Image 1 (tube, helix red, strand yellow):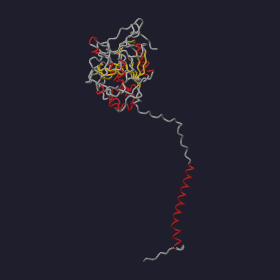
Image 2 (cartoon, rainbow, N blue to C red):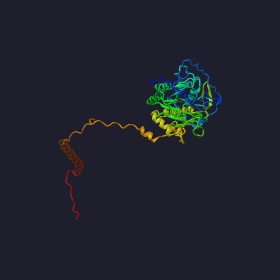
Image 3 (cartoon, rainbow, N blue to C red):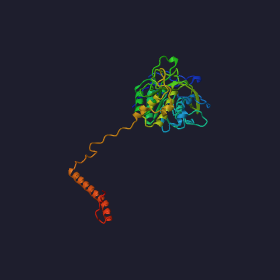
Length: 402
């Protein structure tokens, strides 16, 4: 059973920053180990005020949506039949593009998103198509499960681990974790369990600010088998704030990102690997819908092999390419997925040939010869008898020609 050690983690968000830079620098320093309570809700803690920053109701087309050529991908798949779990601050299921979200609350504070962070992450992954709205999630027909593990931007590593396990137990095909924490056995075991359940775990690589000093790797992104995502701008170059110390699998849009927001609103200024990770989670949902026979290892490998190519530390395989990830033919994958050869037949499956019967062969040969002789006689008689009848059965004469 996963423990409840109270090592706090911080959701990758800058929602506590001034409104002008909201969402920038997600992944600030972690709170210290040994803090009491669970995510700020311990004994004597003040009730969390559910008052997310205000969004907007007027948005334009997202550069990320154009950059990733999503309309072309949607001609092949929109992620139907795939379930994505969002381990975050909850989701505002009242948002018209997120009404198909199933909420799970692990905080005891209710499933409502009081930060807006989880709502933004969920929207990038699977916001439904809506007439007149120029924003749609990467996999608009995928199912969403919101697993709320924090209500105020902090949480404990045990609850984060529990959320990942719960997502795997609920059959999530993809688990998005836009959270960073320190390495811990509970968290590591939770990720191992999710991978064993064939879920693809997508996690943000974490962000750093100038005041952070020398950053360390962010977890669970740094665990083996996790699809770790760094942030990039419209030019495809890694953002300076994207943590290059964490091993990165691919990059995704993470600057001036548009998405849904709590209060049935939107934001166009979101930044950080928090919002890059859900782009990749959405692409994974598309791949799993298009190639249901691939396990999580092959899905992760496909996303990495079809990326646009990285350059420098913290870029991994480069910018994620949804169209290639869904449609590319990978020869090595075809070999890996070739059907198994049938098992050899047992030794007694075919009866041995009976021993040769020489007497039967001899009799058969004589019968065949006799039948041939009779046939020859019948043929000769068929020619000679008509000729004899015409001559009255008299022998023919031979005239002397000399």
